[in-house]
Length: 198
Image 1 (spheres, rainbow, N blue to C red):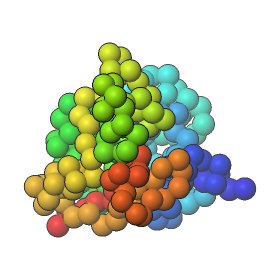
Image 2 (image 1 turned 90 degrees about the horizontal axis):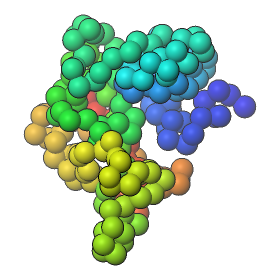
Image 3 (image 1 turned 120 degrees about the vertical axis):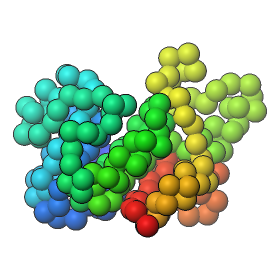
Image 4 (image 1 turned 30 degrees about the vertical axis):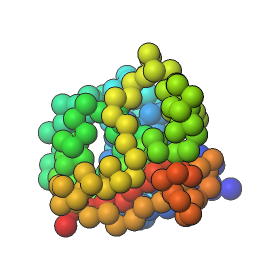
């Protein structure tokens, strides 16, 4: 079994979108699992950024180049068009400056891969109708301790892209690791977008 096949299904999908030998920046890279698999299987030049110093240490220990940084301050350390792919996985909903980070991703990268929990998922809607903020596999926090501050649905993200003249190249919606094509905004818990300028 390849290193990519051992990843979670959401990370496998991201890995499928990344071309061999490309330059990849993973924002909010965690322990570097995605970058490690991409380096091993696709010989990418990968760099990670994470706020948690412990995650950066884990990355470095596994051979992944990573730096500690706060994404809210932007990506000023990286030059224009420095990367082929910039990844922001299940983090955009926790960003204060969502629009700014999306534009920065496409300043430093040729294309961006963004994933986020879909607030329009039917189980989230049901919990709201029952008088509670949603808690699920993709939204694992209670309302009072969540880092998430900007919830969105598929249409919301696509409107943000249109406003910023960002082209959606590909969209996939998943639930429990399987792709959803019928009624994706209702039946999908996790959204994946490949986007680029123009």
